[in-house]
Structure formats: C-alpha cells, structure tokens
Length: 405
Image: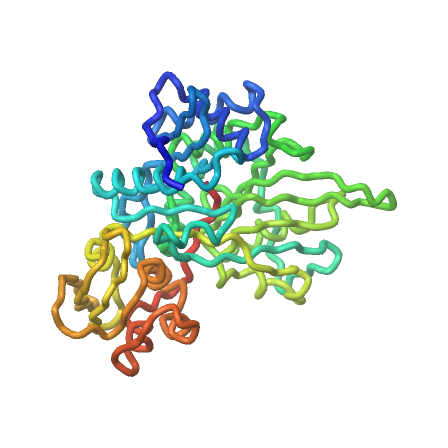
C-alpha cells in the first residue's frame, strides 16, 4: 500500500512529544521523568524524524551525529540510527521505508559515509542495505561456577561518582576505539544519559546504576536486580558496559562484576567475539555464552571508507556492488597496502559480486568473505577471490561497539 503520509524533521520545540512517542512505541513509561531526558538528548547532536496523522505521532526515527572507528584507528562521520518505531495501527504503509530513505539521503548529503544501528527485530533492516559489521557475544555467568585462572588484585577497582565518570570515562573509551574498529562513539549527550540520568522508570525493578573503575584504565556500569528464589542470594548483575585499556584492568573489572555479594549471576549482552573473558576463567561453559545483538552498518560512500582504513598487506580487488537504492551501486576497483589505498570506479570484470548489505560485513574484518561465499551471500567470479579479500581486509581485533544506542 502506498502511504500518503510523509516523514518530516521534528521541530526543536516538539522534541518532548517526539520522545513520548518513542517510549510509547517501545512500551516504556510515558511519565515526564522518563521522557524529558530523551527530549533533552534529542536537542543536541541529534536529528529527529516523525510521521504525523491528524497531529498524532504514528512513526518516529532519530539519528545521533557521531563517528565510527575503522581498522587502523581512523574515524568517519556516522549517522547512528535509533529510536525507530511505528504505531501498530499504522504498519504496512511504508512509513519506516520513507523515514529511512529520508534519513539516509540526508546522511549522504551531509557527508556521512556510514549509517549504523542496533535492531530490536533484526530481519527488518537488510532490506534497507544494512548488514552485520560487528558480531557480539552475550553472557549469563553463574557466580559459583566462575573461577579465574590467574586472579589480579580486585582492590584496583573503586566506586566513582557520576560527575567524575563523565569527566574521565570518555577518554578511556576513545583509547579502546584506537584498537577496535566498528566502535560507535557516544555523543556528549549520550554520555550524560548513560551516566548521570537514572529515573526510576528506567530501572525495571533493578537498583540505581552502579559505576566502578580502575582509575584511568577501565570502567564498568551495571545494575543489580533481585531474584525470588527465597532460599539464598538470587540477584542478577545487569552489566551494561565494561571497557578497559589493558589486561590487568580488564581482569580486575570482570572479577568485580562476577563476584558481587548477594548475587547469583551476571548478565551482559554486548561483548566482542574475541573477548578475553573465556580465557580468564577455568570453565568457559560457566559463562553461558550466546549470540548478542550485532551492530548493523549501511554503506553510503564506499571509496571513502576503503581509503580511510588501513591494510597490513598489499592487494587488489574489483567488486561489483549491488545496491538497489543506488548509494554505492556499481563496480569498484580497490588497490591497497600498508602505504595507503585507492578505490575508483572500474570497468574491468569483477572478482566478486556483493550485495550492499554484505559489503558492511566485510569492511571491518567482522565476517570473512569465505564464510559469506559458503552462505551464498556473495558471488565469486574469480576463483580464490574471497580468500584473497579476507587476507587484504584482515584485522588484529574483532570489531566491537561496547554499548547500545
């Protein structure tokens, strides 16, 4: 069905109404205390879109103006898509597609070569050209089973206050991003939201946010939610982020969150696939590892991305990118090496034919081209081209974004 409703940018004086629509479409609290912090964040480094039907907000989408780290540490401007929702009574009318097209067109016009998002329902966004750039692991550890092989002094960890965390933690996070591609930077407003702001309606029965750190070297933030076993401690540590810049600080923070008094388990859902934790403990099965929510990326300017990242070896590839929306559709020739790279339109026969959503899987070294070939997610026109591309795009560390947005 073709919609007669159209997306529009939200006026600055209507951000509270936009925020209330976001919480309604996510089935969250609509009290002023819950909604006002979102409206405050939307007033900074944020682009808000909505669709109105007789002055009622029936669809919403937001974009944080931020950047994403590439292999080698470069950062590129990125449209971080968030707060996406459509009223149940207005589905199947093309509202999401219209909003997404509007926000991607604007991102391209603003010189943002990437868009990124986390998906509540992951199968939705492939049709808009988003592909998995960073896979993640979730843990549900069992406290009495977790033993660390080579414990460090947990007294390195101390509690900190929100104002101090806001002053110090962004620099720690940025140092981590020097070593990790696929990492989306929280905006200044998002840092305030994740450290300073903590209304009761956001806690889902858990405690206020706990903030701990190894000063200057790492930090963790979490809540504790009590259980109802009735025969002993049954609380769960809900770990929302743990970042460290050296192995000792990382081990100390993990020891802290996995062994809190009166708790029975620790849950976290956004860890890198090459995480240190399974190698820190005597029984990796005690971590209850499962698949976490991946970071999805939409490529809007392929040459800019491929020439901004680094390469440890020399190589070349000609890619035929299939992009129905036209942003990067065409044939591209990549010549790359330790001294730099070029990416230009090409006329030569392609080595690989790659749908645009699959391109995002390759750029950060997060998913091997050979695995995508086996899954028929790309087509190899030259035998061995997928393995050659894997060697060219290889990275030392897996891509990772440490917190959802």
